[in-house]
Image 1 (cartoon, one colour):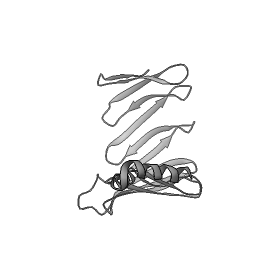
Image 2: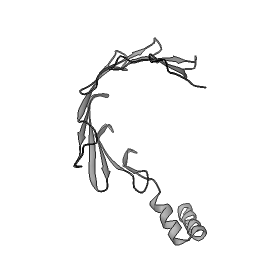
Image 3: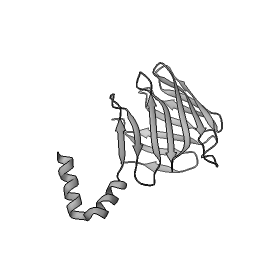
Image 4: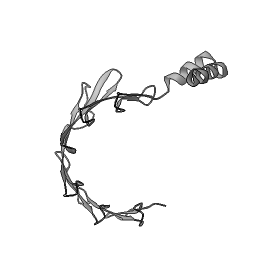
Length: 169
């Protein structure tokens, strides 16, 4: 009832044309019975995203559509609860969105990602401290980013091997 009341007052305040414009620019989200997001569109002229899940509520497919044409697909493969592979495929556009590729995931004994292997870009390594806080990322180009944390676990600083520093409050 509140939504109908709200929509009625938008119609009264803005008029029919402006109201229709507001509705066209509205974000749309749809969920399945398990609460998984199965459709999203951030507004008029934006990509539409369709998602599929397996019986464990794990995302197994993401499809991006723009202008009625499939832009790309991302497929996800799992081993139990751990993501093992991500596969990027182009859709039916004349020019590809990106180079098709796969990403493989490896995990440490705590179940945290320790390495990703991108078939195009190469390996990225991830390191953690004894509290399982993410402390270092080493990219395929050997760029290293180190992370520092408050005692409460909040990240306060990112320092890159290229000299850039991001400090957080």
